[in-house]
Image (cartoon, rainbow, N blue to C red; front, side, top):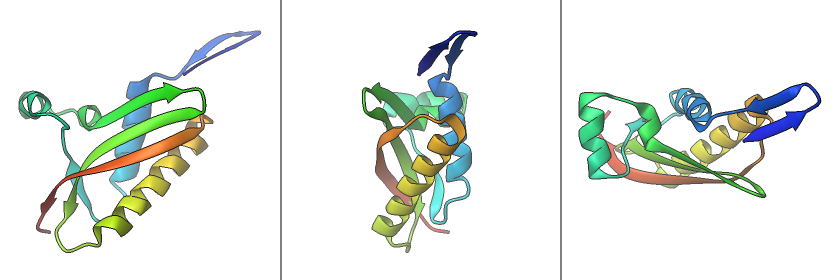
Amino acid sequence: MKEQNELGRIEVLPAAIATLIARALAQCYGVVGLAPPRMTDAVANFFAPDARRSIEIRERPDGLVIDVYLILAYGVRLVAVARSVQHTIKYHVEKTTGLPVAEVNVHIQGLQPQ
């Protein structure tokens, strides 16, 4: 996620985009929290919580591919919340960074009572 111009280089690190995504997710109805994708990340998260472990960002020629691992509230319409999350992430990332988003993949890792 680099851009070169006559003044120099601009680089947006994945960690910055992950922070942006985590803040956007905090506003989404039905999202209780972020979940680590792997057990090793769950153990690491126990000792040093870091939302970015639950957000993976890859770059493709047609735009960013974003994977988020979530815990949703029990009783909400899962597909409706997942679609809302996709639209929210795409909107916030494109608006804030100017980078195109090709895919937003939502992985529902669990449900939690509200």
